[in-house]
Image (cartoon, rainbow, N blue to C red; front, top):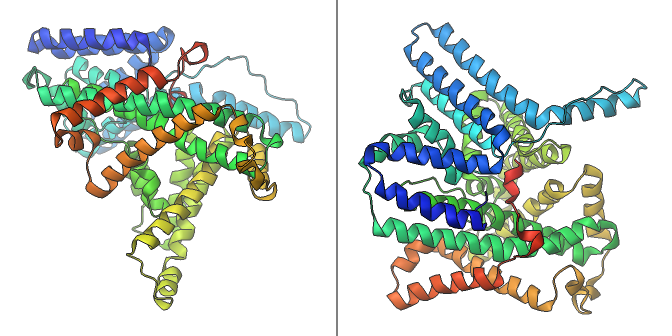
Length: 494
């Protein structure tokens, strides 16, 4: 079941209605049942994996809190990590490892390893595994009390708005809310209206922008060797827009759905394409994952509290693992390492750039300078996105090569840009919708306001006019039809 489906349009109102009607003491049980049903609609077979992750981390949390022997506590955590990461490895990376080994063996004339497994990737396994592992580590560190009630803990791991694609919640936030769900106010008009508004906004950026630009992106990336620089630039920029609207759209719907029920999920995006450096980009992009890697990988490795060489090593390891988390393909690993390299180079040249700007009397706080920084950061991030999207490193490298060598500026004026899967009218719809997205992001960047906060300050006719305009746009301009009926969010595959 996906958010942009008729099934969810039926499922969500039923869940909400009964959530408000059932007795407070069993409210969390109803949400748990709804969450497990939501996941079973994705794939019934892999429910057992979710339950194993829930049970092992719940049991390990209780043991870690009760055990007094430090070594026993460490072994308990280690075994829990081994089981859960082992399951994640088998279902997500086993085929990748076998295929990579076979490539190496074939080059030295050794017979390939036989793979008799046909492993399919369970939806959301990376997300709920990391959320559960974050919990057991927090219990070990003493940041949170272990949850004794297995049903409450199961709801924390499987809460349906963020189960399959995040945000990756922390126990001190979501679990504490689950523990107090029976004390929440049954009906809160502001939460319901702002939550539903966020859901409509999320559907708008997903169905009107992401699914529309995906047609252009797929056309270009499927025919890399047939296009010149203009089409390739359009494809690269288009994918940056697609993955942002697709994933941000999902996170926004998730936050909105949770808010309707009185839950507060962490914000996962904060205008990442307005960042002035790659490091700032990662403070604004997929915040729940980047902070997870910071707290549970980068800092335990030593973070920046060590020598420069070790700091750079920590950065590269963290981003390499982050790339691998996104998928079992060397393109993802390269994408992660490229982002790590951006930050290493940025840190090495920081002193030189500061002196250069001072010598040139550059006004580093001016709008023009910030705009140039944003443009440069976006270009670096967009080049990395090419490797994220491409099927192989060779295709990604060829894409970049043609991007800078096959110049065809006339394509901007002879109408060829409208032969990339979107005709002129569809292209115009995409542009108008993207401008609306930019305005909302500028509002967030300049005034630190979400769209719901901004609308709340406006008069009622303007507020409801915007909401109905968004609903109208989703209904009329959202991408439907056979190829979109089962359209999933990009991050479902991770």
